Length: 232
Ligand SMILES: Nc1ncnc2c1ncn2[C@@H]1O[C@H](COP(=O)(O)OP(=O)(O)OP(=O)(O)O)[C@@H](O)[C@H]1O
Ligand SMILES: Nc1ccn([C@@H]2O[C@H](COP(=O)(O)O)[C@@H](O)[C@H]2O)c(=O)n1
Image (cartoon, rainbow, N blue to C red; front, side, top):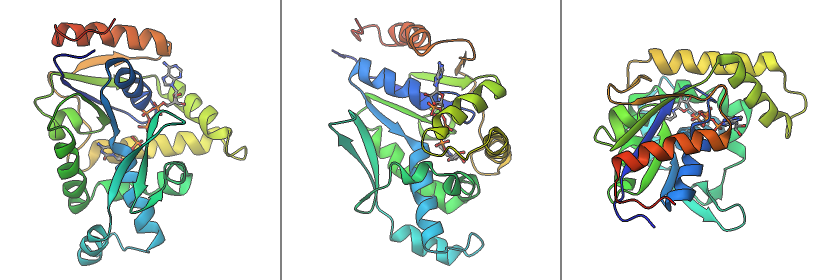
């Protein structure tokens, strides 16, 4: 049982295991888990479906005014699914059509303001693990624990390939590699909130760590920062 709730911010490159770690931590600590990337993906899905021009700011603002995002806990999977207006889009947002466009959409200032305002509200009561690209730098600059995750690029490509292959056996390693490289490049070089390691973030390279090892390591960091949190 957690008695001293903190905010845990996890940032890093694409497909290095941020959401996996965030889910593990949230389950262990009884915290809320928010995958901020899912929000940008859901906005992108809406933009694709409605042919929103990324060059037209009034179209973008109009589209955002019609988007309502929420996370609904799924008892079966024991995870929160993202809803775009009243539709569960948790699976649709993982498709390559969304992955190919999301970094362009997430670089737009109005889109970021829209998402960040909601993310900040979600952290008001603490007891939250959020992963993304700007969580420790912009969304929760005062988070008690900030983690910057990375892993060897080829390890990341193989992990994401194995994950996507289950639902799309036509996918290729090259396609996945290209998408990860492209997203990391845009995310790190955009003007608005580029992906950066916060000065006070702890670096976690999980290239050779199992899921269990990464969790054990991070739980030690949580204990250091929230002495009264019982994580036994
Ligand atoms: N320590 C690990 N060892 C092996 N596979 C892992 C490990 N951590 C995560 N994975 C797997 O790697 C893949 C990417 O993980 P995950 O989706 O958590 O990454 P992410 O950083 O949140 O990605 P993105 O930012 O692109 O959404 C998943 O298939 C996940 O199961
Ligand atoms: N805080 C964030 C989170 C995500 N993004 C953008 O969304 C893309 C998809 O995120 P995943 O975590 O699901 O891979 C990501 O490539 C970023 O472009 C962001 O900008 N800020």
